[in-house]
Length: 274
Image (tube, rainbow, N blue to C red; front, side, top):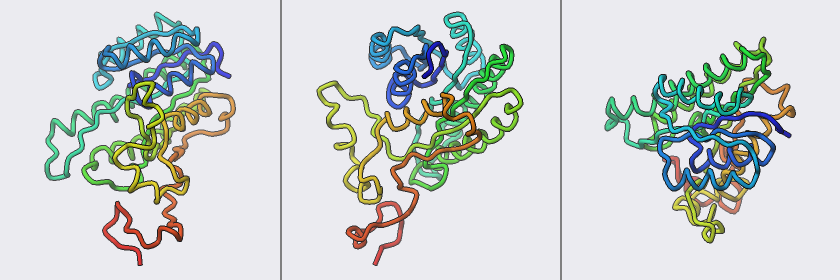
């Protein structure tokens, strides 16, 4: 589906980013892996990519810094020659109550999750335009762009801005044949697990029992659920989809409460269902 395409994914050393990188390679793309540290998780990601026999490059850079962004793209282009698909996935979570957030907390999250997304997308677009590439820019937003969670005001505000930014990028790049869309994950169990622990994914995370009743799909999301949407946005199947934020939450945002759970208190509201 993506044979010969060159894709760069930020924050792809583990978690959702790793699964996106693997899905891109599985579908034929050459992949650039980015993260802050070349730790055991990042090394494992590189190893997991090898069986797909694609060209794989590693990029240790902080996408919250424009100089680092430029270095990352220069390395990627040296390795692959051009870029067809770019995925903004990196983030820095600092959960704190609104009244406890410091300027450093705020800046660290905004630098990576908003400024970094903006300038990474800009650089990717510049490269695509220079080679008349009808490329794809894909941003990872969040369910929190649409609903408040405790201790996540900065993160949610950033993700809301990412969805709005996606609209603007799509509009401005449309004349170049470049599409920009976003994915907004809901509850996703993206923990790092050993191979013999994978059966626990989506089952043993701390929030599973209290959250499943409020998800119509009756399960917690998996990293592959998000990777599958990225593949759709990266492929020709999404040619007529542009500027959209697709929510992948198993129906959580629908707000519906099945009858069998109607006597339970919703864990994320202050009201009690009668």
